[in-house]
Structure formats: C-alpha cells, structure tokens
Image (cartoon, rainbow, N blue to C red; front, top):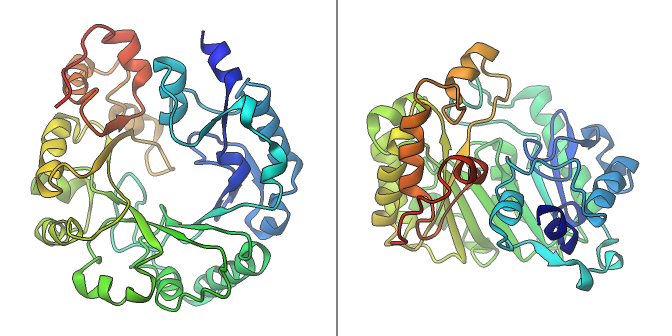
Length: 348
C-alpha cells in the first residue's frame, strides 16, 4: 500500500524550491531531506546539479529514498494516512518539462540573525554584522541576479527573524518589483515579537504580496515561553498576535516545536491560539530537531516521543489530545499509527 501510493504521487517541492543555508543549498527542509545539492557559494549551479537530479529522480521513480517518511509531515500524511497533501501532484498529470526554468521559490535561510536565543536553535545570540552582513547582502544580490526573474515566491526565512535581520528587513522595506517581476507571494516566518502594527504599516507597499505567515511560539504560558523562547516577552507576543489576527492573509500558521519542556501544553496551546485567531488558524506541532545545540545525551532527554523516554506514556496521552483536531497537523503520524491506532479524538 505504502509503496503503491508513493508511486502514484509527485511531491513538487524539489522541482520548484531551493532552501539556501550557510552550510549548503537543499531542495527541501534539510531535516526532512538532508541531501545537500550544492555549497552556498555555488548556488548559481544548484539548479543544474547532479545531486538535485538524483533527488528528483527518486521522487519520479516513487522510491523517495532520500526523504524522511516520518519527519516530513506531508510525506508521512500520504504514506500513513493515505491523504494527499497540498504540494503533491498525480504522477499521470505531472510533466517535468513544466519545471525546467529554475526555482520559483527560494528560502533565504543563510542569515541566522534573530532577536531571540531559543535553545532549540542556538546557544548564543546571532546578529550578522561587518563581513558577515556583507556576505549575506552579496548572497541575496547573487540570488536575485540568477533566479529573480523566474521566482514567484520568497520564503523569509526560518533561520532568521525577518524583522530582526538587517538584510531581510532591508529587502522587505526596499522591495523592488522590477527585480522580481513574477513574484506574487511573500511568506514570512517570524517569532512575531517585532511584527507590530507600526512594522506592518511600513510594509504597505507589499501588503498585496505578503500572503502567508508562520509564527513560531512553542509555549502556552509565560513560564514555559521564557525557557523555550529565551529573550522573548510573553505580553508583547500576545499583543502582537492579537494585532496579527486582524491582518487579512490567505494563510496563517502557528508552529510549536514539541520537546520535553512543553509537551504537556500542546492542547492548551491549540486552544489559546484558536481563541486569539477565532479558529482562523493552522497549528503545526513539529518534533524538535538537533541543530547542533544539544549533546547526544541532552537531545535524548528532549526526544519525548522516543518510546524509551521515561515520560513517553504521558506524551502519548497528550499527543492523542491534539491528534485530528481541526486545522491541526503534526509530523508524528508514525507514532500515532504504532501506539494510538484506535484512539482518534473527535474533531472540534
């Protein structure tokens, strides 16, 4: 069944997308598809690289052998539940020649500048300056020169807060439509602490392009927020979320990185966010990834979903509370299938 369904559908991400990190360029989120397709310095060669062709061929042949079928929430949804996620195409209607002109969406993830020092992401404050800032600006200019004319979407950015980053903020404030003639969609990935009404109004020239947003929070109360979002202010966050709830966008997403510190709050988080956004929101629960900030022993403690974890049974109870809730997704379908196959709660 699993093998058959993989052969029927094409994930189009590696045919339209580049995710550019400081340590290399990828064709998807590297925690879901870890194969590097080029160095960042060689991003001009990424779209024609043999490494990218291998990834694309693995999707075309239905093996998806480079992809994590558990970490990727979309692939696990397809494989485990048989649901067809957005971004997948029926193989019979897929024509690779429609995807030859270059990436239409690039994630500018090579800047890690942020106003927070979340333990899941970094151990020290990171704010690009001097030669590092010059490198980031030059890389942005290089991407614009090489790929700008074919891009339809910008993803800003997942590794930096777009309003804390000097480079990304400058790109937004001085957005030049002539350099991106086809761009009709800007996606913002932010912690929301700097997305005030004043900041939003300063972007009025591109309000029509900003169509989607993801806000990373990871806590349902101030006490936990101080731990998992080190440097953040809970009341500022709540004030900004209430303002953001009034902005008209085509899609709003709130993400929660599940770990030992916060897993008991998953349902509370879902309820809180839906109260603020009046149920007009998507909530995503994502297993924590070790981006080099934890020792192996520390990361073992963070992996609350591991069956050998002493609190695993308590985690299952909390997971079951949010599983299958309305507009709620996660990348723990493999755990549901193995441990909670007959315990689906009602949609609300």
